[in-house]
Length: 375
Image (cartoon, one colour):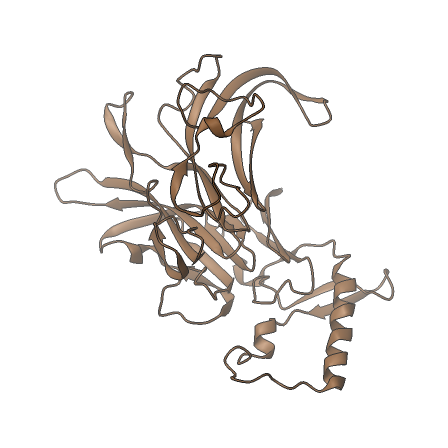
């Protein structure tokens, strides 16, 4: 029996994934399929007039109703009668969707074993369980689907494969291991293997970004408004480290990444030394924390308000009020520790004798660090 293992929400749509790899979607508002991001064309919802009756609601993409709206040189004239009727219908849909309590399986993904399902603001992404292939559908005005410059459609209603191997030379095998999306941006963690005759395979891990990089959110030291081809995020891609246990170099990959809906991102780098080095208070150190992107609300925590186009470590002197950090390293590193009792925000004990670790999340105009139970 399968169960739901992840939920991801965009501005107006919600995606859910089961343990068996089935993909589901649910509308949150009448704009849930404005760019085809819902993956559904219709859904059965409670009728606004009678909660006990069911109404079939059509979710036609808004862009499909007027495909030339943005290309027309003058303002389009809409008759008052048609405009009033449209508003009335939208109001009915909104009342109906407000009480939507069901998830609907995405028809085009039936039979596809999905390992990760992620919702951007108006775009959706799926990563297959095997081979790590990426599918995307929804809005594409800023190239946030990552389909390349030759793909100029403003929206796509059918899951379409994102060919990440185009970012590498021929003969390089690529596999996406993680997807993070927020706003009109997407980040792909890609493991690429290059086979050289007579030598061991060269394995590296890159973080690729696509979409709206006006505020430096692409992390490539550029402020590009539209980026349809995934580019490498500098300072966190192609890194390697020496592993004392195996006496070999190994790729240094991002352990976790969080993208905010307001154009900034934070990444926690993994390391072979995670959980092995102890700080002065006994807690074990984890990975480096790096941030970049929009900084209009000081959400990067760097003490200044300018945007940053490169992943930048977070200095510990940014923290005040005795926050639980170790000043030994001069920058913020996540930490791990063993605790006897784990309590929730209400102070109730939920489990005992667990390892907890710090996690970093990029939110709406802010960044937060919190403790969670380690997997």
